[in-house]
Amino acid sequence: MISRPPQHGTSPETDPAPVDDRARAIDKAANLIEALPWLSRFHGRTVVVKYGGNAMVSEQLRVRFAESIVFLHYAGLRPVVVHGGGPQISAELDRAGVESTFTAGLRVTTDDAMNIVRMVLTGQVNREIVGLVNQHGPFAVGLSGEDANLLTAERKTVTVDGEPVDIGRVGEVTAVDPGAVAALLADGRIPVVSSVARADDGGVYNVNADTAASALAVALGASKLIMLTDVEGLFADYPDNTELISRLNVDELRSLLPTLASGMLPKMEACLHAVEGGVPQAHIIDGRVPHSLLLEVFTDQGVGTMVADEELEAALLAGNGHHPRPWRPTDTTTHSTGDAQ
Image (tube, rainbow, N blue to C red):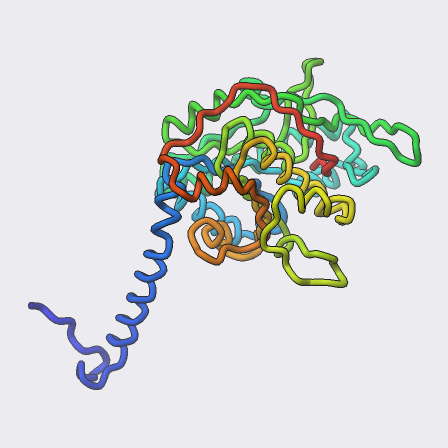
């Protein structure tokens, strides 16, 4: 038996490093074993991840996000990434001298602005995410919601002070055709989807990434929708109460919706829509925490806020087979009033 030589002139009897290394290795093994039941339950399952916010603008967090997505892939899950790119869009509009205004929390998207939105989401942000993931292997394939009619939207209208207001090429998702995404998943790829949708008039719409991710999760029959945000999760009465709500059912969430701030409302509406559409679990988690995605999926404690359908969740956690539910090629209409990018 070959033993490691003592380091720095110490003897094995006096050097504490081997003991410390062994303890750390044991702790690491224990953490891996904790993930075993979750690996079993979610093996082969589709997980839709909405990516945006600070996790997207921090270089370190971008790298960590890509690592987490690849880890899900190697662990036997089938991740799908849906992304926005609000900060990048604002920066490019400023550089181009195109005015960016908001009405009722929505970016007013003129034809000129839509050209920039499309370029940034599909030509810049999407390619960056694909590149980061593919540093670990030939996994990610970039898509726009326009591709293969993946997302179809109609013009969204808003009412301000009782009057309808035109906000340009901002769309509401009316239909999802997930065939292209399903084919990529079947081929062992990781689809990365930008939140731009086709319009029936032949143009394109800027679509809120939260609602796009929710609609796609329903259409794919996903087991989880996970939305990365810039907050820890949902608080009962923020800012007066900073106690995190770790779990809600659909009835509890419906009763809370009228009390939510405008920033959280579209995210929680997207979670509600997903669970009502058959997704057992939808999560809001803090994308500023490195590998928060893995903490949610593979640990007993989890993080953030989860919305669940108790019956569907029970079947999922009981290990009701290791194959994803078949995607349903049906139209999926969303009702969120979330912000567009």
